[in-house]
Amino acid sequence: MAKSNEKKRDFFWLSYSDLMTSLFFVMLVLFVLVYTMQNKLISDLGEKGRELDRIKEIEKTINNIDTTYFKYDKVNKKHILNMHFLFPSGSYNISQIYPDKRVDLIKAGKVIKELILKYPVEDNIKYLIVVEGQASKDGWKGNEDLSFHRAQSLTWLWKLNNIGLDKLQNCEIIIAGSGEKGIPRTKPDIKTANQRFLITIVPKIGQMKK
Image (cartoon, rainbow, N blue to C red):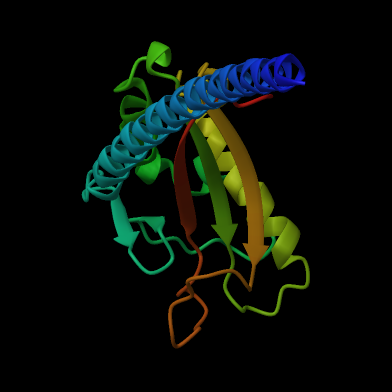
C-alpha cells in the first residue's frame, strides 16, 4: 500500500512538472509573440509619424507657393491663379483670347512643376493636382462644360511649353469644371468675379496607380 501511494505521488509530481514545463513554454511563446508584435507596432507608428511629418513639411511648402502667381485660400485649401479674366460668352481658348497673359500663365505652370520636382521620385512622394475652371453667372447655359474646357485649355498651354504635369512620374492631374458652382466663389457674384482657375495640390506618400 505504501509503495502504491509513493508511485501515485511520483506520478503526480511528474505530471505537475510536465504541466509547468508546458505552461512555461506557452508563456515564453506568448511573450515572444507579444514582444515581436509590440516592436512591429512601434516601428509602424514611427514610420507613420515620419510620413506625417513629411506630408506637413510638403504642405507647408505648397501653401507658401509663389504669391506672384497664386493666392492661397486656407479655408478651402486651394490656390487661386492670381490673374483676372473676362472670357467672351461661349469662349474658352485661353491662348487666343489672352496672348498678353501667356508668359505669366507659363511661369505659373513652371512654379507648380518645380514644386513637384523638388522631391525626388525615390522619396515616394506623389501629387494629385486638380486644375479647376470656374465661370461667372453671365447667363450662358453651358457654363459647366465651358469652365472644363477653359481648364483644359490651360493644361494644353502648359503641355505645349514643356510643362506637361501628367508626364511626371510622381504626379496625377485632373481637369475639372465647376461652372457657376464650386468653392470658393467671390461675392458679389458679378459678371467678371469668378472667371478664374483654382488649383488644388494634394501630396501623398505611397503608390498612385494611373
